[in-house]
Length: 249
Image 1 (cartoon, rainbow, N blue to C red):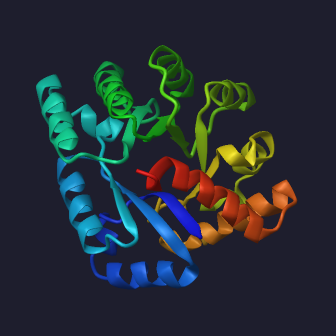
Image 2 (image 1 turned 90 degrees about the horizontal axis):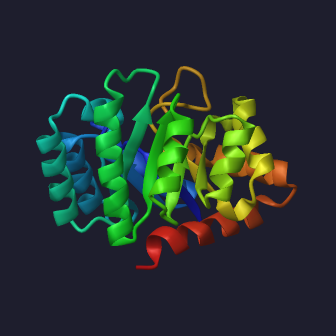
């Protein structure tokens, strides 16, 4: 009953062995992988992968904040129309990136558009908030939506508390095994608001190896350890949360 709510199976590093990656994920006990698109070509490829592995993969369509900077507002609007036409069950990866971004206005334009679409369709949205956590939460306060998943959220304790009060879910990456921030986040948040992810192929729990959905097992190990409950109970709770958000529709 494992889930990976955020991976990038369309990444070129998986082109030669995606079938093996999917098979390994199934053997590890995964029931759901949400693969996230980050631009038009990525969204198209993600849809193809989800169609081929429809028993396991759910497509999440979006526009990465840095990618949004290279588009005109008209092009952003056209991509959102394209995504809406595909009747998505999840949106993302979208959000704000203050670390590498240069045009925060363009990023915010796209982010707000996606939030309004998620709210209109009443579907979950997976949000990237790197070095822009405060701004992301401010926008979430304005555009209230009850199905927000903060992916790899690195905000400080006060921002974690604020996001929690807004009702956000937090997807915990497999790199938790060597990242004290995510261990701290898990200790702060009710387990019913936690989800598990890998962000494959990056953020591998194993140095010098590409990340894969099967490594979501690291999340379960650490969440169960921090919450002082069995791995089986941890899997069950997180799967039920994911089922409520992604599968019952």
